[in-house]
Image 1 (tube, rainbow, N blue to C red):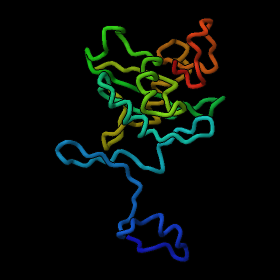
Image 2 (cartoon, one colour):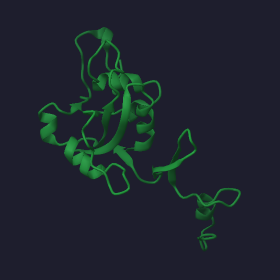
Image 3 (cartoon, helix red, strand yellow):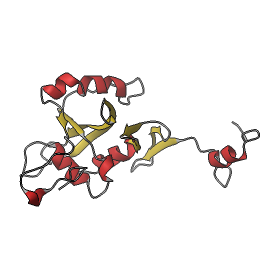
Image 4 (spheres, helix red, strand yellow):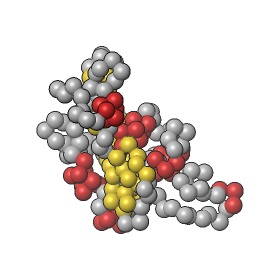
Length: 185
């Protein structure tokens, strides 16, 4: 364990808390029984959308708070125009969507998240997986993100309408429903 950065006081102050603990950069979850689980790295797992850095963990945690979501993962999906897009890979809780719709749409997800996330952080891609579908994992049991991105967010799947894509700059004919840049009406 290091005590300080040699000849770099600024990095030393950034790396340690006031009471001397080292900031590891790990993101940790604590469950109701007090069990700690490392959820990711603060310096990694970002989506770089249109020049902005979006922490995937932040978006994931807000999606997981939705009552109809059993499991959620946010992936950075390459995009020619925007650099990367926020891709949401979601498993639903059976029977938890309200009677207004039988399946989750990207518009519904974005609207439900609009009160808790900035518009630019809202998912622009959505893939819903089945309740029994196995997601690719690494030996530690976490999602194999690069493999999942290739399996669930390919151009072929988007063309086949398996992945829902948010189209920016869409203008509707009805002026009472003007869509903003983020697409939350």
